[in-house]
Each structure stands twice: as C-alpha cells, then as structure tokens.
Length: 195
Image (cartoon, helix red, strand yellow):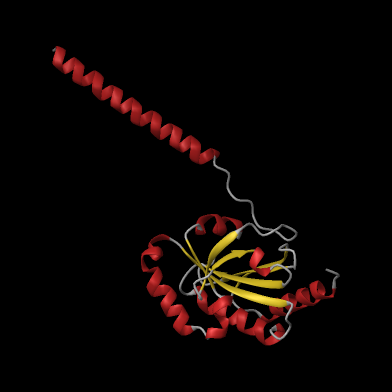
C-alpha cells in the first residue's frame, strides 16, 4: 500500500506541474500583445531580410529619403500579384530617382531549410539590376500577417512609404487598375510635398 501511495502522490505531483505549466503558458500567450494593424500615418515597424545580392536589408531605413512601394507576398501564388503591381509601378514611376520599390517574399515555416535553393531560383528569375529590389524575409511572418490583416493567399500586400518611412497608402489584392491609379496619385502627392 505504501508503494502505491507513493506512486500516486508522485503522479499527482507530476500532473500538477504539467497543469501549472500549461496554465502559465496559455496565460502568457494570451497576455502577449498582438501587433496592431498597420495604418496610414504609422511608421513602418522594422522589417529585416536579405537582398538577392546577399547583403542584409532593413526597412524602413533602406528606403530612407525615397518614396517606396513595398509589395509583400506570403505564398508562392502571391508572386504573380506582387510582380503585376511592381511591373506597372516601375513602368509608371520607375524613372524617378526619388521613388523605389521592393518585392518582399515573406517565407515562414519550413522554407528556411530550402533557403539556398529558393534564393538561387529567385536570383535566376530576376534581372540582375533588380536584385537589390527583392528582399527575402525568412521567419517572423505571423506578426506581419496580423499587421496587414492577412486574408487572401494569392494577394499582394502593398505599403507605400513616404521619405521618412511613414505609411501613406495601403492595399491588399490582385492587380486593380482603379487602385493602381490611386497609388500613382498618392506617389505624386508625396513627391509634390516638401521634404
């Protein structure tokens, strides 16, 4: 009986430890603050990755002094929307030295294991002169999905920054001519404003 009583007490103690650990873990997760939705007028939170050239990249600092369109994609299929938006953007305002853009593949989960192959494939598929316009971000996609209120897998998530790194325009979706005109109009308004 004594042996059984000891085993029962030990099992209860172990269960209590697991129960307390689980409760404190869930309480910690609930108390962890969710990122606020990104909005017009907010400064872009730090976003770090690597250019296709291999150099480290950090936004908004990399775009300081320029008007910048950030086109984020969270899935393989979103690359089509990202490329549609950035191609039209380059065609419309690409000759202006005060304007730039970044295609930003947001790669989470197991993608880190294939990083070399993914980056190599992107380098081959991207003209060399645009390698510093592509920033790959591995990991940390969850908070960015929260900030951008991620819903659509094949969408481009677009952020227009002014010269100080402040968000001036936001949109999520496939290419849309009406929204594109709105984007170009926003670029013109920012460009016309004093620095």
